[in-house]
Length: 338
Image (tube, rainbow, N blue to C red):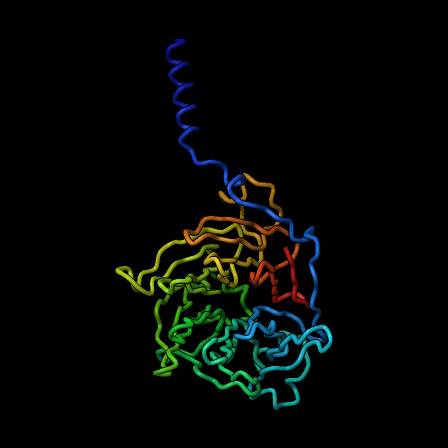
């Protein structure tokens, strides 16, 4: 009897030794609402700085807001200035507003990214498609409003290959626009698309169909793959751009919340913002996190850092040791200097 008990205990010890260490000890956690020296760049009469962009001179941030325009931050002495707009803003109804009901008429910029070689800013407008505006801003030019004969319904995240100028972007659903984004989740809609726009040919190519709420995208630092967030399943996928796996899609990371935009930092790591917390999984069950709002992932998809707080983030960008926070729900951009 004692021999059997000893054998059982030894088996349990061996099993525990083989198990990976708890995730709570493998990453750093920061409470975002308790971080010191967080500054707020307040917006005036508009809200929802969903995505942020900096030009090749380091100026900005630029952000798309609730009135359908793109604004540029010019410092405390000057404040915000209008940078870009679409043709519908020539109408009186597309003035200053903060109402989701006007989005389908006036537009809603989401993903933003500069092509550093040309200085052009590319904009994914949730309702009207893919746009571009020159370094001096002004009226945006429409590049694409559909692919393969199917109009875009919910154009969302984007990133640019800085070498080739190719733009990678998502259409989150073929059925539900941004104003009905909750239905994309509730219905389990899987009609999203990952696409690319080639500025040389001016053509859009559909890379992957039947994605579940594809959202933010980010290209790796060596341009061999890109990441795409699937919001409803709370996961990140990897799409291979080069090498023997070109065109293949594979799992990259599971998340404790619904991912939004993804931004790469200077070390080749990825910041993933999360709008809402999901059901507890392996990432949260062993920690004391109340509301994880962003993760920093390694190139291999391992969690390196978690931001925890009571706000809903749509984007986190890291620049020179400073974190910039965007949110479709906030009326300001957050700035944290480590």
